[in-house]
Amino acid sequence: MGHTVTKRVTIVKGYLAANDIDKKKMKLCAAACERRLLELPDVPTGKEAGIVHFEMSTWFGLPATGETPREIVKRWNAEWLKIVAMPDTRDRMRKDRHPSQRVSILD
Image (cartoon, rainbow, N blue to C red; front, side, top):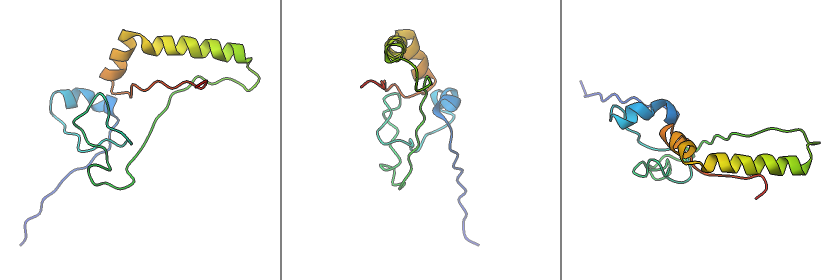
């Protein structure tokens, strides 16, 4: 009989596995993103690891109706950018393995 090597591959959200990653109970082989994560610079992207078409993304938004006045949207945007720039917010997002990229609809 030949030898069989069993490997387990699990796709997990970084924030769900953060504790195990930090304690070295789990090793990330690749990140499903276009660029390396700032929070996990030693983890290659899927492409770097040789996995073709291995990209996913998540985004969070503050929805508003199309009739919302632009001044209100600009105010929400300004407040949101202040919140995600706060050190405690950045630290929590980093701890939970959320990407630290700031995107504004007004950019």
